[in-house]
Length: 309
Image: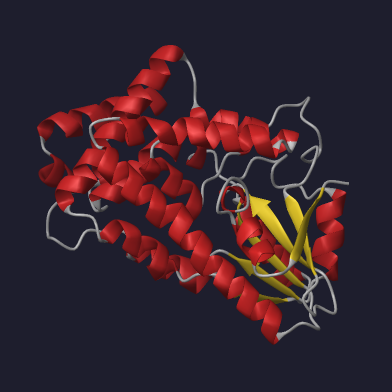
């Protein structure tokens, strides 16, 4: 999974209910959940690692997650998940250059896209994608087979559950801040990302593998090390190829830079309201590996421990 596909998990709601099997457990074996204490906090707060998917096992709270969620007065998702914010974010991914997608990317990439779409459903063509920015098309195509099955992603369900429980809701980031990472790219760079995405999809289909399935499986197992290794493996391809500089730049902007800003935001909230319990839900990739939010908060003096039972 190259950085552009990684971005789909960070910024775009993906539905994957079809991935759950009858023999799947009712919820993840271990939750991606961390408790924050110390440094003057009067109540514990929590970090909850999500996958931006609608798989029914992924979206079922582990009992430990239920307890943490119930304790919290305020629930945060990466970006606001209310209807108005989601509509605004959807509008932000539409082209503004007066071109159709097929005009911007040329005949060869258009043929490749239509080949991928037909592999998902024979009747699909590029028409529904024509209004999208090039980078947006690159995020949509890899997950389209899952989106077509319907269902809400875990992040949206966390928000809805908080609203239903009468909890205060807020966001760690603004949608514009996430989308700006891609809008900063030139059209040529966006075409490179689309080309790389299509290449990896074609290679994966020949091998009969789907990288998203591997991530979902690791998440359901609750195995942070396996999940980190899978993410690293899938991100390494573009970083080591001819577009290494672009891959490394995107990885830095999407993960490392955002970890720093999100950790600062979370620390600011904790310091300002030490008497409240806060539940921060964000992509699990932000809480595992080097320079994670967990490490950054610990460096600020908080005691951050994973809860698995």
